[in-house]
Image (cartoon, rainbow, N blue to C red):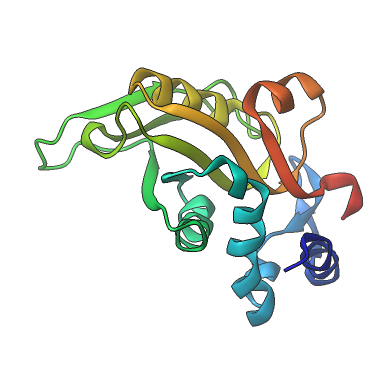
Length: 182
């Protein structure tokens, strides 16, 4: 599969919405899920970005990372771990790792976490999401992975919307398209 072909199809399928006051016009990722062939190819295309790194755990933040993460994990032959946001107390006694993020694109601080037993030393972890804009959630995820004693491989996203190269380098961001190309 050629990633550029997937990138072209992402651009073709992108619908731009203009009804949000906080960000003005923005591309709607939901349009990508509606195109069956594109949806089938997103996981393998994102996996291809890190295939040489051999991840054994794919970490996907709620909500869209939980859609894409399993697609990437299957393509890599890896496991998947859901990165929960603002997890409420539930009746499980399984201990969790938590970290509060820097402000996200909506200027929110989110508490991110996963069950301790799901990521441990020796794991090679790849974060997968649809979009990265500030790097706040990815930075919190990287801290959680380090706390678990696992190896951070990087961040695979459909769209790179970062405005600075520093978080891109620090978080190992690789993308299928850049926001300016949508």
